[in-house]
Length: 139
Image (tube, rainbow, N blue to C red):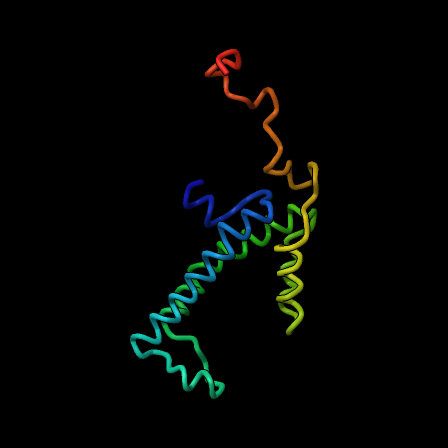
């Protein structure tokens, strides 16, 4: 998978891909950006504990640069469940929206077979899509 395909995902992805290729790495990158802001002095943890903002310039840059990958992967995950990307707007609902998207994307199984967004990634390719070389007799 190339960077462009990772950054702007199309089609469908399964739960494992969503967790391992998008959610966990982007969360780790955000934590590292927060630590970079704290170590440089852009964010003070005492102010954050008192209710201040934890968004320093490094964390803001990471969030802005990874937002397209996060949104496209969540849309592809919703497509795996047969839902439109418009369901991402559930995340706008305060408090419960983020939790609802986490449950929809991370914990509920996708459609087993093909849906209007294409076949699942776990299905083997059809005979016409299989490579001609090496011949199957070599296996």
